[in-house]
Image (cartoon, rainbow, N blue to C red; front, side, top):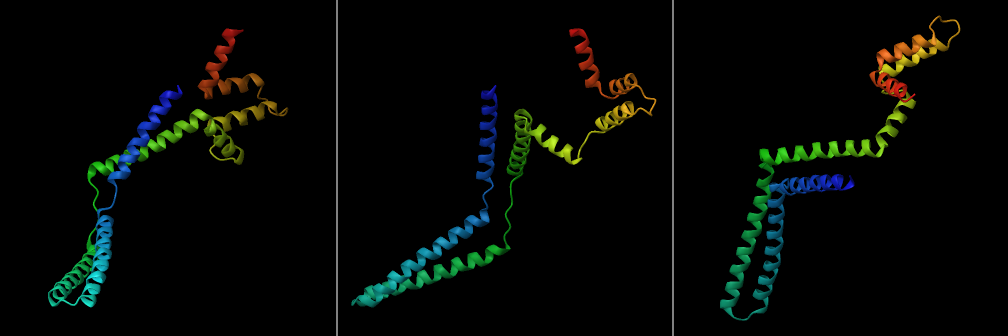
Length: 183
């Protein structure tokens, strides 16, 4: 029985991992790449400027200056990319949204099943009932009839109380029939 739950949990985790992998932001990826380009270009610009300062040959110095200019252009263009990126919005394909929504639904359903199977759900219901929240109307009616049956001034008998409970709660009726067969 636990193997079945474990297999279902593995499927749910797999779907969640796929959804997370496909839900990465393209805008964020472009921004990260532009930042990386800017950092690398800045480092190579520093190296090119050091070559210009330390070399004595004119041809090498000219080439190093050219490299430095190119790196400055790269830094400027990467900055322009990051500035233009503010006008871009991420779009998620329909199938990725569908997978994401299915994963969320599976997680919610899995949580409900887990709560139901472990008995934690009943514990939560009992806590809510003790505060007076979410008490079923059927239970309220049954309690009201039972209180009338125990009141000596009310003409409602215990048999009438049972009849009302049998009529309002089918589970009670089936449980009563089962117990009668056992007797």
